[in-house]
Length: 228
Ligand code: 5RP
Image 1 (cartoon, rainbow, N blue to C red):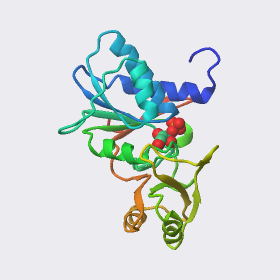
Image 2 (cartoon, rainbow, N blue to C red):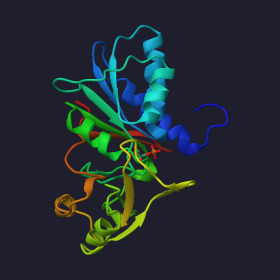
Image 3 (cartoon, protein in one colour):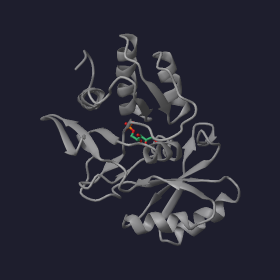
Image 4 (spheres, rainbow, N blue to C red):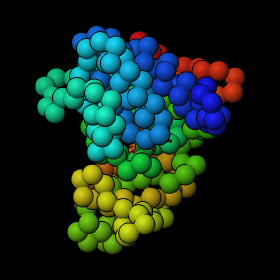
């Protein structure tokens, strides 16, 4: 742990450092978004600086800025699959389902996770839950008639709240809005019902996408699932 780093930040860094061990020369690597993924990007940048040859695909403008600042070569187009994607999560269940998107990058994160041979979550121990749904599920919606989309989500039933930025509604990198929705129960059927609502672009429920989660806490770093 670096000087001045809080416990939680040290755990995020430890999880990211373990994930860096999975990177091999020649890989196409997906870079997640958020405060945990940031440690992975910075660590990968250091490896690239020492001569590691990889290409990366970013999931947000924030991760792009960070990757470019570290000198990581970026792939703008993709044919076939990425070798490995490493990303954070807001909640991780024992079966490796997760909620993502509190950083607002859920759509691109899901596209990249889905396009990856291996999708590995990195997190501090506070993210592990018995059941998904401790907090809200982020849902990216089209700005057009978004209030009607929110009403349809409320009828599921759920309690949507428009995400705000200091200067107005929060906008994703895709120009869309985010509704943070509380549900009494979260399961795969809920994900399908959300997709049936016109105006819903994507939701932050990631079912059966991750093969492993690297979770770091006060007693060390553990792996849920198989790193492969
Ligand atoms: C961004 C995400 C993040 O990965 C998630 O919110 C976790 O972020 P952090 O590592 O900052 O806790 O899904 O859309």
